[in-house]
Length: 156
Image 1: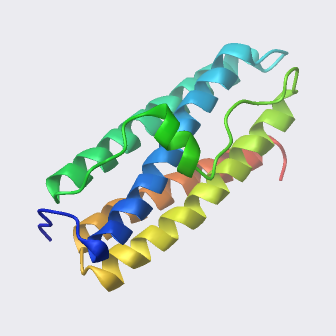
Image 2 (image 1 turned 90 degrees about the vertical axis):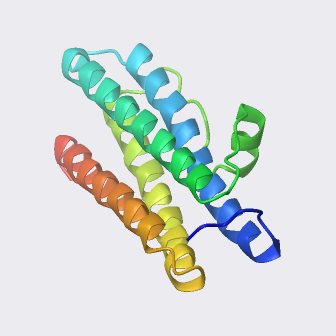
């Protein structure tokens, strides 16, 4: 697929991909917050895990933005834009314990998986863009693996 100028039809793909980009950006910042503010006996392990997760988020958001540019779409690039379309809320609970933090991340990842599934369907069915759909499916797979690991950590 090679879209040069987003028309009315391609605007739908651009909008849905920008929502996913926004989710990754907000999650990236949120994971940094947890990385910096986690406390308690599990600090050493969780501090490292949150760094791993925000590095994954950075990779995914860059990959998505570059894919958008490659097919002629315009990725959003400001926090104002991200916050206006993201399904993930920024911040975290002040003084939250590690179980609350992990549950928050799992819930956010679940929201991201839902959005990515919808974006995958739009890319594949409406635009026949299997390359973008494949990339989004990889994002889903990675998030689902992390959800499983985080749920196992909290005993779910």
